[in-house]
Length: 334
Ligand code: AHM
Ligand code: MG
Image (tube, rainbow, N blue to C red; front, side, top):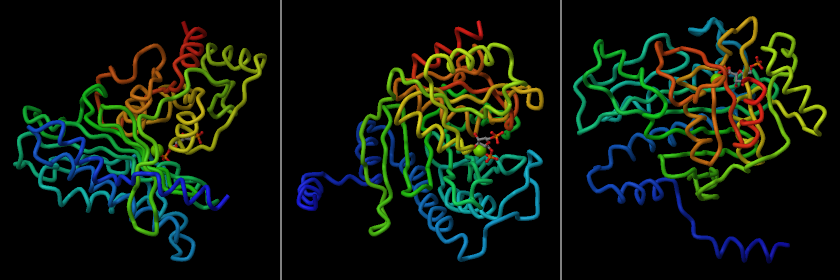
């Protein structure tokens, strides 16, 4: 009822993402606002990308950009727009040393002589699931923040750190509403963009993933080329009343798993023996979020966040979600 709705909104304390970040930063007096600047650049960019996605058809920016990215996948026009938006927003922050994008072969050295005590490396997948754009499906941005390693030589190797080193990670889902899910290592917070005032508002604090839930999310069409453990798990799940959901946008699929529980997987296939998803742009940030929400994330039998990357665009198989469901898959992989 309308009266109930009005009573509810009046009783809510509105917290914007900026005020949340400032209050978090106040807990660490040794920091001086640098970190907040980095995350506010990401949130500004997310608003820009959300607006462009919403108007994509009208502005005629759907479809192929006529080029391929570093993974030999065709780039959508909005892949390029989203990438440029993040590069421009982050490039103006003096404490960002390096940005690395799934769309670019090499990391970009923004400031080799950075200001501030501990400069940052920011990695992102600017528009995940962009093949769903043309059908008005959900797409997303995924990001990961690390300290820049000043000892790294050459400097381009600074981002090659395991996921446990991440200082922050998150994603933005551009769906019916624009949702930003963030961790700075202190639980998971969920914000929704209020388009009327242009702010991300905190809608759920300390998001926890359900311990168990009979849901799995993977591209089941590839079953015959999965390793046998995954095939046996799927046969078991079919016999045990499980339900399957798969959008084909990792952000949308993982968001569902985070909210409702279950397990998201991208196993190795014959075509992609290490899986398709990228360790540093997709698997690591999602793994940090899921672990911070009380779930688990593995790449085969290894904890994803412990993997030492050897190259920026390395791929990793992914099993993440509710602790009980991830453990069940692993029983079949032993
Ligand atoms: P992208 O980053 O180029 O959009 O590709 C990654 C996407 C993920 O969002 C999704 O989980 C996966 O590719 C879907 O792949 P498939 O079509 O093989 O199921
Ligand atoms: Mg992606």
